[in-house]
Amino acid sequence: MVADLLVLLTLALVVAAATAAVLTRDPARQALVLALLGLALTVLFTVLQSPDVALSQLAVGSALTPLMLLLTVRKVRGRGRRDGGKRGPA
Image (tube, rainbow, N blue to C red; front, side, top):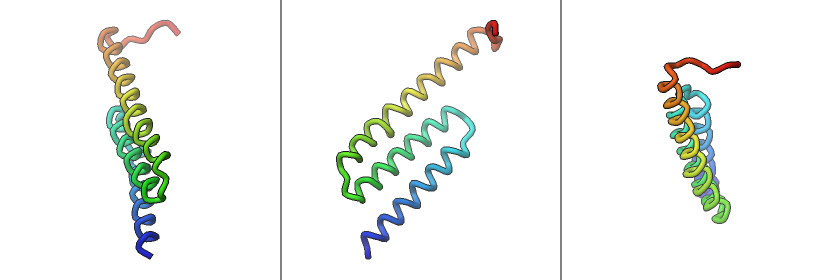
């Protein structure tokens, strides 16, 4: 009974984090919310007694993917400032 309640609570946390990731419009903030979603999924996998999947999710979903997104956003924004906001040839 308590285990089922814990699973439901973590599922609600995952749904809330996923909804926040979809509704966030700024790419940098979206990457941070995606990291929170990865942490919520890590907790869910831990509650479901799947530690190997939880560790993989922690490494990839909570750390590497948001980091790569943040670095990409930084590079794209830096390129936009350097070019004066002008786009290249189509």
